[in-house]
Image 1 (cartoon, one colour):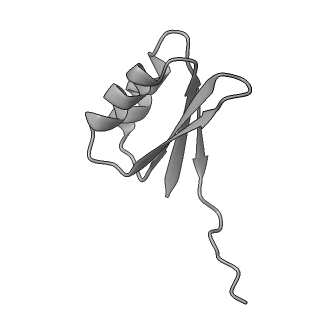
Image 2 (image 1 turned 180 degrees about the horizontal axis):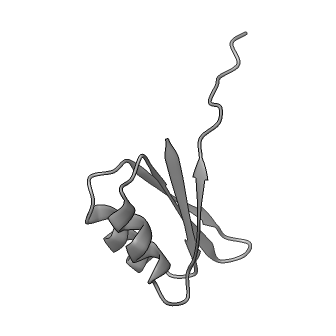
Length: 72
């Protein structure tokens, strides 16, 4: 499964991008740096193409290698 990350200082373009597609996402914020990070899972190629086209934003895509949870 592919995971896309898009970083920028304005959350609204990230929200619009995420809400235009049916993929699960999370929007994270780091107040110390004034940065927003959009994380989208199991997305299609059209979303990645649109993310790359966002001016003033950086994007990365990764293949999920492992997911887990520690149980006590």
